[in-house]
Structure formats: C-alpha cells, structure tokens
Image (cartoon, rainbow, N blue to C red; front, side):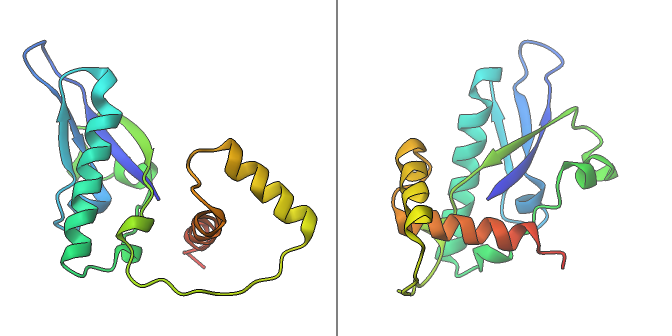
Length: 146
C-alpha cells in the first residue's frame, strides 16, 4: 500500500526531521516519526508504519479499510500546513492481513511466464500468491472511488 508521508524540515542542526503519515494519524493509530538525517527518512517512517500496522492487526483493526487520500488532499489541509515536502512510501501490508483463502485460477501460459519473470526481477514479490494479492489490492485501491 502506498502511504503519503509529510516531512517537516528542521530549522537547525539540533532538530530532527518530523514525519507524519496522515492516513494513520487521522485514525489515531500513530503515524508520527522522526529522523536525524535525511538519509534515514525512509527507514524510520517505514518502521513506524509497520509498527502501527502490527498493533492495528493485533487489535483486530481492518487494515484494508485504511484510506490514504493522497498528498494533494493533505497538502491543502490546514492540519498539515507545517509540512514542507511529501513522500510516498510503499509498504507491504499482506503480513498484517487476516485470514487467507486458497483459490484456483486459470492463467494463460504467456501471462504466467511474464508474471514469473516479474516475480524474479522484483524483490517486492515473494511468490505468485504474493504477486496476485498485491496486484489485486492495487487494482481495487486504484478504483476505490468508483
């Protein structure tokens, strides 16, 4: 899932970069992080998001109901006026999802070969199951406004 992250640049060298993940913050599930160096932004906010997702899953929160409204929305929200730049962070939410169901599908050979090449080329996918779950989630998320 793509999370929009607001970054507040420090005013001096004694202050850390502040980060906020509005999709989690607005649900009261954390969404705040900090990093001392610009190179630490991704790692620190990723860890913060994953810890929030872990807690949410333990509390039986439906992870699939999280809706990130995108930086255009958050950028115009006075709540985030302190943010001076925005990042997009992709986090694999599948480890935090509940029950999984085994399904059987038929896929044309040429398509399966392309999928297998993509899985081997990109470390984001661990298996065919993972590929299909991520692809389905992205398709449904992309058209969630319909």
